[in-house]
Amino acid sequence: MADPITNWQIASWLWDRKDEIARKVADLIAWFRGKPDDDRGILIIGPAGTGKTTLARLLSGQFDWLLDSPWDYRESWDIEHYTLADDPDVEIVVPPGQQYRNEATWPELMRQLSAGVYRGVIFTTCYGYHTPNTLSYRDHVLNARSKDEFMAAYLPDRRADELRVLRTLLPHLAVVPKRTWLLTVVCKQDLWGERQKDVEDHYLRGEFGREIGAAVAKAGAATLRHDFVFLSLLIANLVTVAGERLKANEAGYDHRRQITSLRRLFEAVAALQGWEGEP
Picture 1: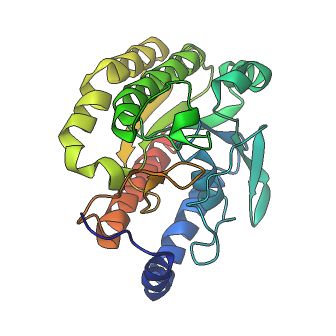
Picture 2: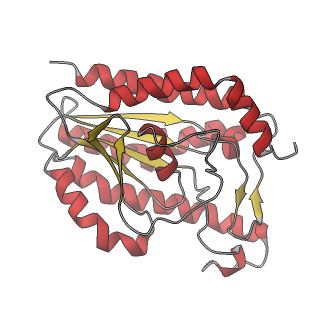
């Protein structure tokens, strides 16, 4: 297993490529401004610990890869709102992903979604590698006696939670009155990249993909479009709040592969942009 990548190494690599990254992010932000006649917002939703806030800050232009520390997980307590740095009329909305907070924040968002308030939805998942919100794995309700036992129970439990959230979302997307897109972003590829085929089978050909396919069929392909992206927003170990390492980033998953994965996000965005512009 390779040694964990240090923040200094990441900062050095990013500094060398800051111009390339800045151009790509600028293009992404420009797309999120949307068409002049469509000021609807973007909803980023998904279970807790899957990368929603990091992605929202990146897309809104409020994240500096050289100065910020996305490795430090901060639990969201309420709905977060982000606006584009140079266009405050465009809003990105991020509700908290914890199930016990859903009842207070999600009903109104789902009503708005059904009414066509959002022009697009980004659904974040990570094949179960959700950042735990407990101090230690020993504090988790799974009550595991070891890290291995914890991970064996935790990953399928979190994958089931991804499906639960998806099933909450899809009935509202299936009845949208205006053209709307759904982009599923499967994050943390640096943790599961060696199992790429298993991950793709899970999301594309398993129950997850079938549920989305049914929703698209109900809404109609001209009204609802869906795409998948598999990527890594950053390279980091999966750790608890107390710093217990539950899963190290995979040996060989370097920054070049990370940027390649981010390019897939840019390509998906370009495809959605073209679809939005169709008559």
